[in-house]
Image (tube, rainbow, N blue to C red):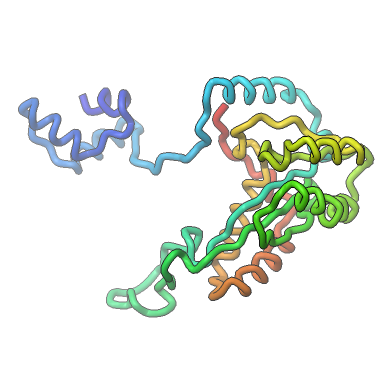
Length: 254
């Protein structure tokens, strides 16, 4: 019964199982339930967060995967991937586990400083290719289409030159409205950019997510104390990230 119940509903808690069994006339402890499920190869894990997908998104992602299934590796090496991300000061990315002795929980080395509302955050735009990180910039204002197109000239093209991208390199960005605006598409067309067609609701398909994760871990380990330090540390750690970081595979949900 226990295994059958959690197979049907993985979100069933141990408390739910204890109560269900008690109503059926069987008294068991949570430890017994846990041991039983472990013997069946089931363990309690945090549910993975994935994009909310409608059927149209599923079909678009499958279409994308099938179209690129047999692409040679050198094609992907010719792509510059881009994205924006938010990094918080004293936020959820901070280190949460420490090794400490009894009664040392309040020692400064064993605590994480917190302030109301997380202490603020910064928004970053970055890009990278198989050859390594491109430029990383802080976006200090709400970016609109005009600012986004200006960023191409100021940051994307210099990144392509610094990374020594081959002629005909491909640019990837998601379907944010400022990315898909008519003026942006026209600018890209006039500049002869090749743009990778991208399925909506697919941040998990973008390998730059691995780079963002690496950056946030590195920044959290250095524990910046203010927004200025947060920005400086982000820039320093971004420059240290190896080219192989973006290739670390993650499961995706098609």
